[in-house]
Length: 430
Ligand code: HOZ
Picture 1 (spheres, rainbow, N blue to C red):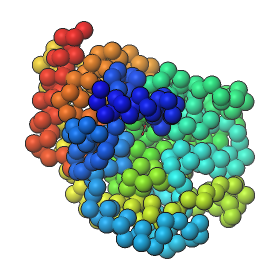
Picture 2: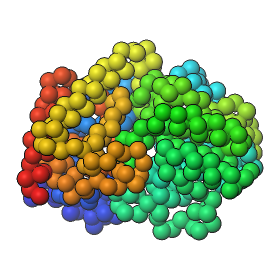
Picture 3: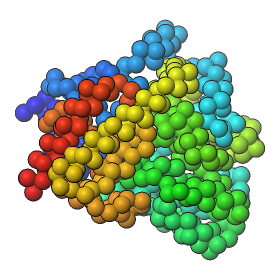
């Protein structure tokens, strides 16, 4: 037994399913999870001393590779001054100023501890501001594990086969309306049928949680127009896309201004951080400025703020990061396409910037129903073949891959070669 296997066996007796977040258990791809000991630049190292090239990067945050020096230094400096005060700090003001500067639609922002907290708070704010109860979300979009979002949810929820989780009350579920992604007519119908009742439409402007799915031309613009017409707020969940698809996130890339934005992952530089922000008139309803309550002992934690500030400052001051990520992403996607052709497969690759997914289906993937046509057993065999060749992918078909600037051209070639071989191996095993 490997050390990872031994740890997993023990973990299963102590932690539900042996993991602290479901997808990590590798159930969707077979085998056992790797227990990670350390990471540096583009590499992960497991407890058995094996090295893997990273294509998840902590599900997004490590956009500059692992143990990035400026972030590491900021944390080392910060820990000398204690870890938490539960009182305001200078760094929180600097962080808020930087976010307002970087993210086009954000005029005021509140820090929290995760993307889940950010989305839960954002819909409460939307409901408080509009005095309406219902929200519209999209099938296959994932906004963390808040009750209101575990309806037709993507990511780990669909990977584990529970897109509508037990434990969410009927009353809560009734307030969440769902539409297929990229389907404006469905959203319009929901807004018409629930006239003056919808507080907000929330979506991932580029989806990462059913695999990478792009908005079709006009979709985001159309949602903006519908929200304006119906007095509903538009919430962009930029937990994955924020500071990744551009310094100002997907809203900068696509030129659409949401009313509220939720953030996470990169914003903490690898520490547990989230944030929500938006129009000042809306954010002014948040307590203690207004009546909508939301709080947290560790919100704005000084160590987390230091890591996040160092990360965001670097991204803000180095636009070349995004040029590099675009180039690396395109090379990888192109290489993967060639691998598919060589294997005689006509499968779909969705790609934008540093996010991409190889879908094991011949259908184009523009929504959840299409994503679900993938050959999941084939994906499992492919995943294991890649792992054997030292490439660490997301252990589920319904996740995006995330690229970091630590990937060199040489590593990209290595990954492309591994992809070619793994596709052949996965097919041969069928
Ligand atoms: N649901 C997360 C990705 N979409 C997985 C997080 C994790 O397991 O760390």
